[in-house]
Length: 228
Image (cartoon, rainbow, N blue to C red; front, top):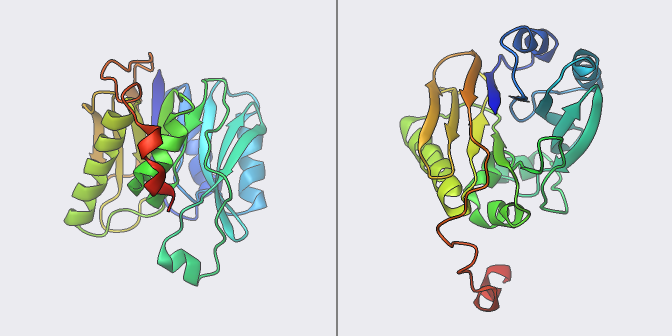
């Protein structure tokens, strides 16, 4: 499947949306957390996707909640509210979502941990138990230093390996190190972009592959402490 990962300018959805769709055609377009910041931005996205033969995953700032939306053929197919917030988000009055789950799309189920949620293996595993075709990580800002970049990259790769599902992600062109990445089910890097803005393409094999037994060998009967 051909995926377009965008690193757009922040606060510029009205111009960045048509620019992304004017490039090479893709089956999935991914835009960062908070990319759509108003009802006007959302309306523009719906207008531009009416004739688009593709699925769009885009972050949407919905009042005091950060959401990820699946948009197809000019309509919102499904949405997910970010459940795990940073301390800074809580201080700003952000509200968390109430259910960790996958999103429906014509490509199959999509696991979409929003930004910081990627750092919680429990969030991604709950989503992975629904057998998604892909894990998508929309990120708000770029990384602020090399250590954070290395940690985020390592975590994304680990989520791919432990859940045996491809992982892709991208952020806005802000912060010190803007990025886009794609790891396959085995944790092999298929795309890595730093310090560039634009649309970046990667072909990913979404054929289900779970040969390592991570799911079959689980012991849910002993995992109760995770809920404490």
